[in-house]
Amino acid sequence: MPSLLSVNVGMPKDVSWEGRTVHTGVWKYPVRGPAMVRRLNIDGDGQGDTNGHGGEQRAVLVYQIQSYRHWQRHFGRDDLGYGQFGENLTVDGLLDDEVCIGDRYRIGEAEFEVTQPRVTCYRVGMRLGEPELPALLVSHHRPGFYMRVVREGHIRAGDRIVQTRTGPGELSVADTDALLYLPGRDPAKLRRALNIPALSPGWQGSFRELLAAADRPGTDTGPAWNGFRALRVAEVVPESTTVSSIHLAAPDGTRLPAALAGQYLTLRIPGAGRPAPVRSYSLSSVSEAGSYRISVKHEPHGTASGYLTTKLRPGAILEVAAPRGDFVLAEGTAPVLLISAGIGLTPVLSMLHELAAQDSDREVWWIHGARGPQEHPLAAEAHALLTSLPHAREHLFYSAATSEERHRSHATAGRLSKDKLIALSIPADAFAYVCGPASFMADMQHALTTAGIDPARIHTELFGTLPSINPGLTGQTGRPPHQPSGPPGTGPLVTFARSGISVAFPDGERSLLELADACDVPARWSCRTGVCHTCTTRLLSGDVAYSPAPLEPPPDGEVLICCSSPDTDIVLDM
Image (cartoon, rainbow, N blue to C red; front, side, top):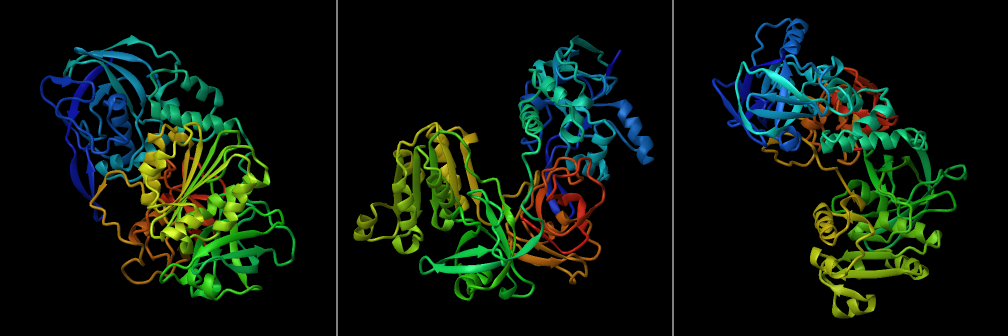
């Protein structure tokens, strides 16, 4: 009969790791005597990162002595003690390929229900000094699992483990883990998993996304072309004192592939410097003529934007990556909220063009904030498009305009704020598309949810770098991206397009993620070993090599930066 070998607890602490500080609760140590199990954890235990660990569905982590013996043989180690895999309960039995989601077990006075496999995370590798361990836990089908507490009570080492109920779906922990992290997943198993009430909400959400993707094969066709291609500047149109629209066409006069309203182009601009700077700009219109238009604001000290708005002339050649981006209009009949500030109007303006081209009868709200009419480019164009739509509303907010300027533009005084947005009485069943500075978008998201709009219907597009995901790290300085310290590298050129820097890959660097860390380029990661795909990044051009190979390759045109290095000069959308 299965038995409890050890109860392990530990409070979060700060740990030095690769020159940074990680706040983590992965250090667990055996408890002598009885331990009280409560709804959220065991007395004396805690989690450092509650986004990935802890909470009612992940109150207790279980790992088996059989897996300990497996890793002792695999790594040739004899120094592994109870709690070293971050588990609360070290058990004899309850193997991952036998225990099912929804199984219930009585241990001592307490009763538990299995909710999900362990979340793959770099910190278990950090704890054991084995960086590849997160990937190995998945590939060797030995993740361990979480349980919620059905009945609180005392437990202690030596207690028998008695199964009190079998999970309804007969889906083992190992099979559940493979469904999320390994290729070749079975849609029938995904559906079976979603019918297991005990499966944690986070894993249910991931499985719903995977099932939706499996049900629409072939819809993701990838970019219209790989890498960069030469496009000719057909026209440069000043829109204001600081903004110019640039029309791009194929040099041979053929039609360019269609783009979706709201997508962006990435430009490599040879005339603006060496190495050529790379920047991304949203499309500001949809074109029936097979050309593209971007509208660029001249930023102070902006090398690329300064060149594009003051020196670029018709006939010039720019290198352009294919349209990309998921910030696009959802089909349907629901109301549409197009909300922007400053130059953030460009992607939502292209959506407005699309709605006008469709003669849409949807309810359309155009809500824009600017300092005043001089800083409001393309205002007349947007107004004309709104006039052509039968159910359109326009709300402008000028924060630094005269009363006469506001009167002429029918604008409201002050900046577009959360309270002013709520006061508009926007429809709660709308889809919202928001673009502007990060603080503005955060305010608008809060306002929209307060107004009753489902967060799943709120879409944002952020200029510049994406917010980082660095679980457990503390004391981050938020420095702007920069060249790495130390001697220049001799490897291929790595360009971080959103961050605006290019770096020769340093000698001895192991991965693109480590290079991004060295440059303070905001990055998104969790496992750092090619498992979780949190670090998936668009690869705009070039080729990479993997080491270790990811358990599941990313889609075409994307790369896992945590376990890859450049084979050629590359451009990353980060």
